[in-house]
Image 1 (spheres, rainbow, N blue to C red):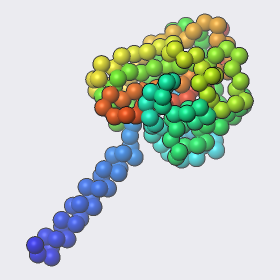
Image 2 (image 1 turned 30 degrees about the vertical axis):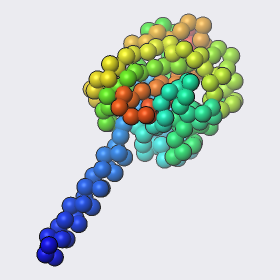
Image 3 (image 1 turned 90 degrees about the horizontal axis):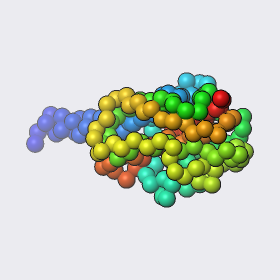
Image 4 (image 1 turned 60 degrees about the horizontal axis):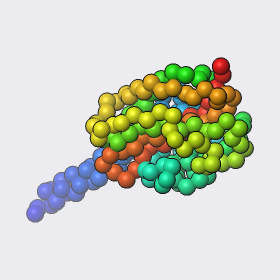
Length: 197
């Protein structure tokens, strides 16, 4: 192999590796309506968010919640060690979006699409302790909304009509989970809500 060919081959390999990293950095999805904790970090409405302010779409962790997946205390970050700030929890730490019980539309914006097993939405129990890190004990562990993905590739924007349960008022966290079909991971989005009747 001559010197020019060798150098071109090296450049091609480097570009290939960089492209792979860039595609990973652009992945994968966040809840844009109602606006999630990580998206509000990206918009500068939530502050002190760390790296997630640049990557609201990258809150990815092991799937299987609630029987597996991220451990208690790191649910909002999906167990992703790059985004520990998302796990901070108090009644006043995060900006809240207003929801009403009953029909609501949840929209995921996907920056990279993946074959999907399901989309699931969990809500904290009435009377949960908002001063403690999020745990399974704080949530109703049966999703109030579940959409089967049928292992299909979704579009770049996905909308779900879900019924937020009656009997929930005030500050609640909704944990939205996008379960990927062809990997062992899921995407997690915490949504801080003020539910009013």
